[in-house]
Length: 227
Image (cartoon, rainbow, N blue to C red; front, side, top):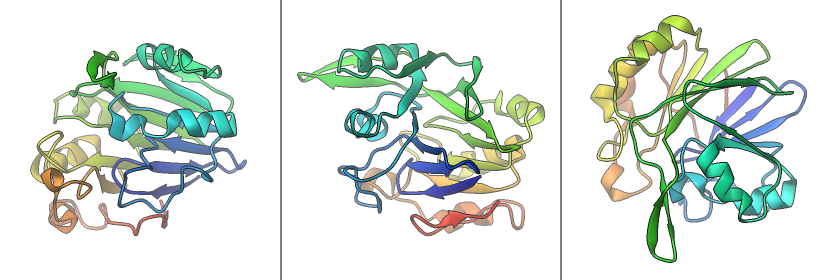
């Protein structure tokens, strides 16, 4: 499996068989990304929650590529009203074996809503995503606060690579994220959800320095992550 980070919370995974997985494709309006919503390839789109900086370009990308979209039941039901058909709904605590591998949803302490005609509508619960394929497990923690069950997640799963938010204000900051990384016992950790907007500006090296040696690193945008 290959992984890469593309700004904010956008992560791409490419499996050994060529399957391309796109997580939280906030591309249009994301000043940090190197991706183009009109050309990015995806066979599967995974969504942690419904906020616009995570749902992003999902509808346009899925319609263009025919990608399967996997998210909470509430989000996929909403996407169905927009014309998407290849959808799979889940909930936190649930797991499912797909053709490409296994996805398990974990809790995330965060909101999940979207504005429709200027009015907010809640779209269920926010989640994290444990993706297991090619004998490796990647954990996209999603937007979340630090919570004690991360210890259990770390004890029950061998996590090869974790993407952890550090931006603060809306998610964990570096201090709490460092605790999360230790509890998760991930072999490799990459910070996400920072520096996209003024409210979430952080120095990721401060976070990396809090971790055990050779665990955390800050890849270049679009760089293939070796893990």
